[in-house]
Length: 438
Image (cartoon, one colour):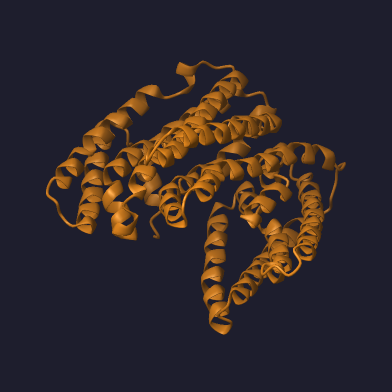
């Protein structure tokens, strides 16, 4: 939690700033952008090291004392690593961007168990993650130096403008981290550790799906930024509309399927001890459609980062107040269920505000921009495809068998109906084939 919050603030929104500025600059101006981004990140790393060192001095003999300086080194190194995927995608190197993430994962998988074997203590693990961060840092530094720092740097520095764009993004990320975890803070304060474990497991799934929209944003936001600079609002609208349609094709069926397989999924993966996670998990599934709608890409591409910060801050306050009020007024098991309900409700309100603001920027109407007919078809096909899943649940099979058969039957029926209704066409088939290794 310390790393997540500090990293969110002190990276100063530089990965997102690259998505905004890089497509707006010509090839001769880009080395300057990368150089001043590196300067900002270097200053940030010094601030981080100072903060963690001061923290280690302030906590006296607390058992976390020996870890804080090492955690500061890790965070300082990872500050430089975070923007690399965005940078590679902006350079048109989507393949290397993917393989860099794979390589980083391989490094983690290779180094961390080795560190734990050599020194089977918490300190040994910390040494391991610092070493992985150092390896990643060296690879990123090599790419940035060879690609940009060996070229002539032209143009006038605009550090202030870049920070004006990036700092609200960093603060928004911090508020988002806090907002996402408000429910967990409250559960930790008012319930036992065993209840917290059940709750945390039920709430864990929703953020995972954010990886999909994050990956899409890395591709779409630079295109929108360039179109916004050129005043091409129709192109932004088309990108926005097509993105929503494609993301809806993932999130709407996922929502419906997961609602009906929630129990066998939880029990199969985490045993009967966590069956009580199912209601919490189900409530959080109501968030999934927002991942296809709460696309802040237009606001990011048009430089409205301060608006996003104000929105995140206000929604966080509302979530804290509403969660606490429900916790105090509800009784029994409903006290626990009221907390995720508050998070879901506030997220949907935020989604509607973002949608409305995006329409205002691109000067478009709701019906012109959102593919309602396509989304209705996807929802209808998903509802029909879940019928075999409901039928399987009546046979009282083992949870693993129910889970496997449900996923297979849903997938076959959904894909068949989607192809029949032309929700899947030649472009989608080509895209699927592109993921095949040969």
